[in-house]
Image (cartoon, rainbow, N blue to C red):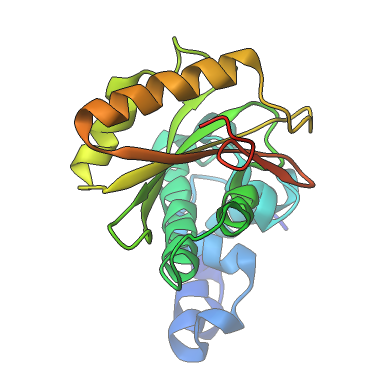
Length: 228
């Protein structure tokens, strides 16, 4: 498509926003949805051109959702503001799915939670430490990312963990992180950190119910192994 093309060169009935309003969101393409989200192009580059490049560069919607703000903003015509809008939209979608799955039933065994957690972090190249906040019925209130990188006490501090727990009035918490190596066994640092956080939780009256290590093919539960 010619980069000099603009959205206003299209007939009104073919413009993404008008098509969504007339046909419904499920009847427009991913590039059109993205164009609506971005809003406008830049001189010499239409919003449609930018949207199509994003879809192509990140190999589809899944890759686009996994891209960082820095990676998105590197595309000419995106910038930090539009990259932030894209990340916000994907995060809202993720939280919608979380509410749909996490509030259906209480988290009664590690397999249920591992399945939910795995969707978001199993393909990550770095370790992502997640905090799962539960209410008195063991239903998920929220899942937040506490740190990214090799798991150790300097990256995951009790004050960061329990700040989120207190803000959401969580009754209990579950810790979770991925092992990009696909080795499900906890390291010495994993065990030491878990015990440190559990002790802090006892002092604050917020129980650590489990720590789950997620890999592409399975999971390890500290509680099932008697490590917690």
